Length: 154
Image (cartoon, rainbow, N blue to C red; front, side, top):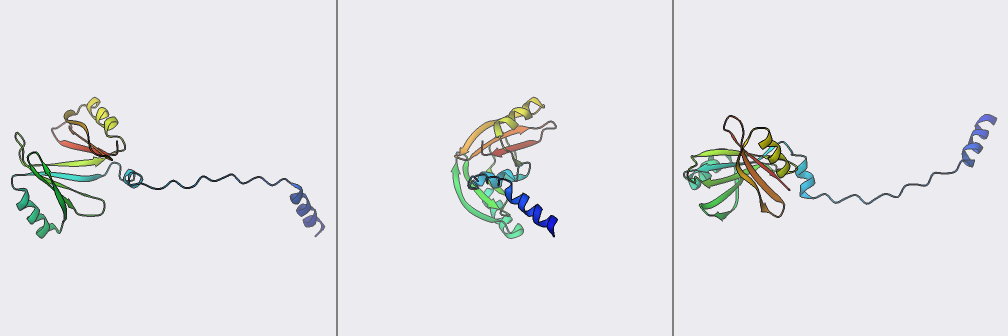
C-alpha cells in the first residue's frame, strides 16, 4: 500500500498540462459532402431528339423523378434525379451533335483536372465554365473519342 500512496503523491505534484483550446467545428457545406463523391459520376446528360418523350419514358420505365426545367438556347433543360447522390439532364440535340450521353465526374477542382486531362491527351470540347455560384463544368474528349464531363465547386 505504501508504494501506491507514494505514487499518488508523486503524480499529484506533477504539473497538469493545460488543455488546448478547441476551435469550433467548421460548418459543413454542400462542398464538403460533394468532395466525398470526387471521382464518381454524379450527373449524366442526355442529348435527345425528343427530350419530352425521353422524360416520360424515364419516368415510367426507370422511376426517375424530375425537377423544374430551365430554358437553354436550344430548348429547355430537363433535370432528373435517380438517387440523392446522382441525376442529370436531358437536352435537345444540337448540331453537329447526334443523340448521345455525357457522364459528368465530380472533381475537387475542374480547372486543374481539365488542364491535367488535356496534358494527358484529351481534346477540349468545352473549357471550364461557371454555371452556378458553386458549380463549374467542362467537357473533354478522352482518347478513343469518349466525351467526359468534369463538375465541381471550382
